[in-house]
Image 1 (tube, one colour):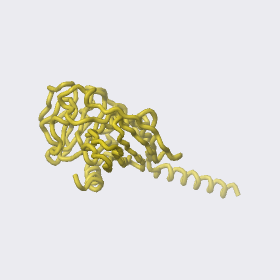
Image 2 (cartoon, rainbow, N blue to C red):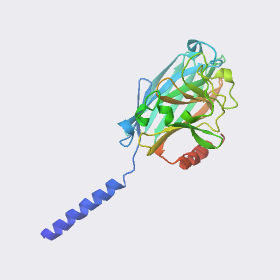
Image 3 (cartoon, rainbow, N blue to C red):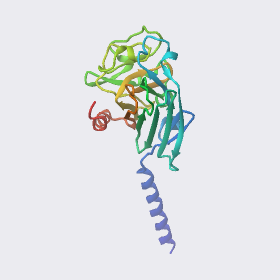
Length: 275
């Protein structure tokens, strides 16, 4: 009898150990006061903060005071699932435009679907918007160093931002660096130094402190990639104005996954086939 109990105990311990070794890390999300918190026990520091959303902006931003570019907005939470897997937000801009945000968390990514609508009888000037991802805990680095672990894609390969072949230093506001797609006018991007380099795609990201994970983000359509004045990375999404009664759909991703660049690029191409 004792031997049977002993054997059962050993089997239960083995089963518990086997389960713990095969637990897949999961992400969950919370939102409060314009801050989206991405949580996971496997993340450096336990979480990644996203200022969601930092700003809605007009065109012509690059050479004028930032205050003239901003369109005031207010975001409220409509609902949040008990399991931390889905959040619904609603944003109202001062010009009457509404945006509905559905944000979902899965094993290793956050998905955004934004439906933005102009219910007014006037054209909206809203050109683009900024989600600001704070990566200080993730990279383990400060303002001066984190570009050593941050990357985008140039000439068909991952390129560390610290090793970019060209770096612009002159702008209305410094420091920082902005990269734009070919279809966005230089005068319409952030008033930080604008790189002459056009990235291959809309991905920007970084490696974790221990380099076991990577974080990357992309939007469709995208306005700019941006390395900022705090320890942050941006893929800012393009809106392009809204006619009276017009509705647009915008989608985005934040990937937080094992450090496998080829797998990241493959997923990006699947998720954003038109870029």
